[in-house]
Image (tube, rainbow, N blue to C red; front, top):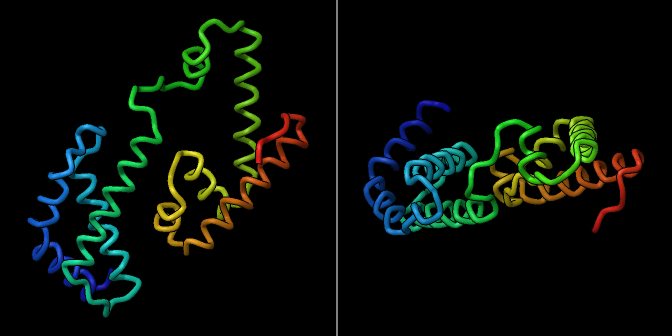
Length: 180
């Protein structure tokens, strides 16, 4: 980040930090397991990316408020898309935890199935793999675009093509049909 962009960002933060904090805290994020500081950081990142894209951009209070609101909405959606309870750390625990009554043969087959899926994902070009992995983790297309520094259309196409390529590879391995 160049010095001018950094100064503009610091100026924005100094000017609006109190209002941003109040707006974030007024939304009872603890009900969703979301930390207010994480939201503040995400707002700063989004403002920084905006300033990097357009160094001469005018960012009035209404724009900053829009960024805060969209960040809050995205965070709540992510929180609702992911389970709140802690998941086991290891892959073996995941299979056993999810299906405790399964036989050892079935659990081993599931672990092999997961390994094949991982292999298919890892075979994707990095440009497609990262957006697909984010999508599978529950991120929205706009979030994927922002995190990957892509346009929304590019993110959508990379996710779609990456998923299609992964499905084709899995079909070639005989791992079933998929709902489209």
